[in-house]
Length: 78
Image (tube, rainbow, N blue to C red):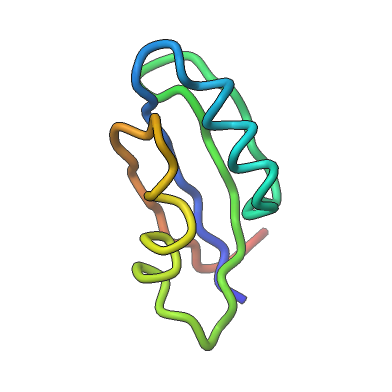
């Protein structure tokens, strides 16, 4: 499994709805509401046999209210 960290910017007033949809889809390991430029930070695991970009496109980016994301690939956990 590949661990990816995703910062999510939501359209104004939609962050709780977006978080609920993500939670309902059980896509995440951790999901946090945060302050700053982005509204949510999410940690998710993508199966090794999946293309990470396609997996994110197919399972996350179709959620209404998501305006922008930044995805960080991880390498080693300490």
